[in-house]
Image (cartoon, rainbow, N blue to C red; front, side, top):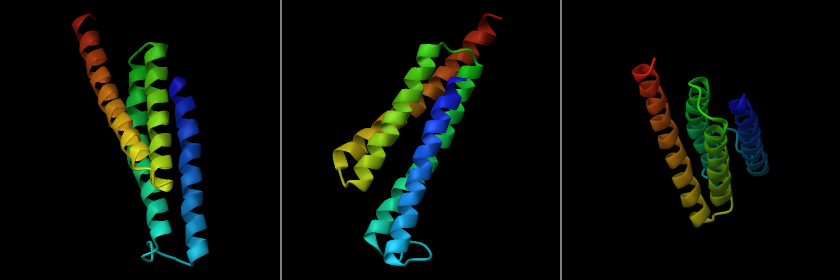
Amino acid sequence: MITALYASVLALLICWLTLQVIKARKKNQVRYADGGVEELQIARTAHSNAVEYIPITLILLFLLETNGASIWLLHLGGMALLIGRLLHCRGILGEWMTGRVLGMQITIFTLVSLALSNLFYLSFDKLFS
C-alpha cells in the first residue's frame, strides 16, 4: 500500500513536531497552553497545523488508492503532501514566510486535487460498470 508509506513518514513528522512542543515547554517551564511564550506558540502552531491537514489528506490518498488510481498518481499525491508539509514546518519553525506560504499552497492544492480525483474515479466507475 502506497498510502502506508506516506502515512508512516508523516506520522514521524508529527512525532518530531510533538517533540519540538515538549522541548519548548520544558525550556520555558510552561505546563499548559503556550504561557505567552513565542517559541512555544510557534512550535504549537507548526504541530497543530500538521495535525489538521495531514489526516484528511491521507484519508483522501487512501481512498484514491482503494478506488484503483495509478501508482504514479498516488506517489505524486503523497510526495506533494510530504513536500508541502515539510516546507510549511520549516517555514513556521524557521520563521521563513516564503516556505510557510509555499508549503500551505502545495498542501491545499494536494488536498483539492485528491478530492477531485476521488470524485472523478467514483463517477468514472459508476459510468462504466
